Image (tube, rainbow, N blue to C red):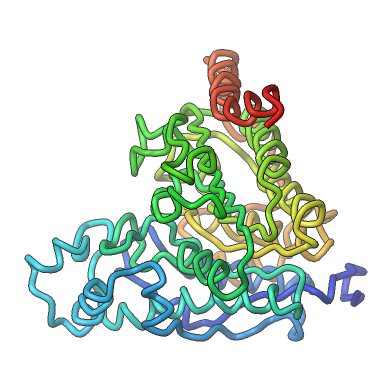
Length: 398
């Protein structure tokens, strides 16, 4: 353990994978996916003295062979050609490239492969025993498919990393996705695999991309019973979200008993997020990593790999929420009160909105939700449905 400025005690067994090269994954200036949010988080943690040089490790680029753990070679070649400006519009459309969500940009293969390699870097640090926990905020691109880009995601770093864990280390993986959008690419990649358990809690697909993640998506074949989804209703608030997350994750972890936990930490369920319709606050983003941390130590010998994900209010939400993730990981999570003035002064001139003054949100962040009781009851029923398979097996003694 190391004592830092401000009296924080930071665990020495954690790594933070980071490079300014993450900002090269950029579709265009007006696109909502903006990796400046990673730099904002990094700078916030540096400013409060909660991130030490010894914990920052550089990423590497994933090889083509590593990408083919999940992605088709023809698709990888198409991404390379697109990044060189050599892919026809028709061919690009077949691969999900050049769309409004996932436009083509120069050197997109290299930028995308770096994000995959950064998650593999995190995996190797943890599973080689060099670290207990590792964080890669550049990753979490959970919509990418075997042969197609989707939803801002070119390559699916989490899916590649999970298959990499399976092949290199032979471990059973629990994947937990708290992004407001369903983690479809990861779920479908392992839908028939009983050694990978996927759990996604997200806004219902009735209102939101990608439209999947229904409670009855439970897996296929040998993988049946190892896919869990909790689609919560629009306008869900902290109490209901956290009830669903806590109840489900505890029971799923006890059922599956993983060797390692991989968490995708999208923070777009926040009330401020412009692309979703949920109403959670920083209370939720304090609690999510706290339980994941506990599960990692209770079941996995501490082995926890965390990645980023969605989050489109890059000024008011993402830096605070992702900083809290690192602070929990490194046992510094008792921070509260004002954000550092130096950080706010440095970034306010670039922000189109007023930066928050405090780590936590005010109690009156939004007007009361009229349907709160109805929404909470509906979400509780969804949790019951999602966990029915586990509970019925437990009752049957299997």
